Amino acid sequence: MTTNDTFIVSKAGYTYVAIAIGAILVFTFLDFTFLRFFSVIGLIVLVYIYRNPELEIPYMQKGALLSPVDGKIIAINTLDHGYEIVIKSSLFDISILRAPFFSSVRSINLRRGARLSTEIKKAALLNEKVELVFEDRYNNVVHVEHMLDNSIDDLNLYLHEELDVTQGRRYGVMTQGKTVISVPLSSRLSVQLDSQVKAGETLLGYLS
Image 1 (spheres, rainbow, N blue to C red):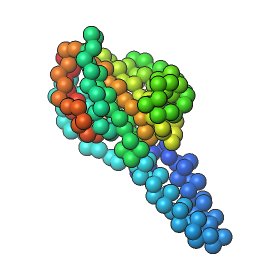
Image 2: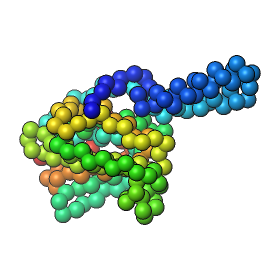
Image 3: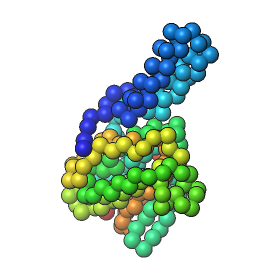
Image 4: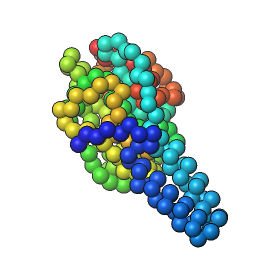
């Protein structure tokens, strides 16, 4: 299922923001100043977590691959089949997920589950995650896996298989987690370990 999500606060956060506003109104009516104060703080934090800024996606050359998430690169692995870029997103990174390149969604494999710390061994088996496969018209294939990590919310996705996506298009929300981007060995990477990346803005490299 696809949906527009262009308001200043992502749709994924509407329920939480509404609850915080309701609490403020109730505590104001009851004159519970202390609780109202904490409700206001909670509202500010929620709006910040679910902020949904507009981006001016930079012009990119053919084959350019942008980061799908905000966060920090914690690993770059070379495997037999290609490279893996691992990005850790914190609670206060922008939670919006964005398409890394002009492509079609070839497959979506979503597993609902826990939100344990990814430092726990069982997290790989229990945590909620989604595996996405993007492919462009030049047969470049990129695998993206998002896994929750002590997240306050479920994964929210606005995609379906065979959907054509433009580079930088919003396709979901992940409030905190780990992302693994797998690209072919023929790709040229342009990022380094410990780099901070921005969804829809940071160039990860070029596909062949």
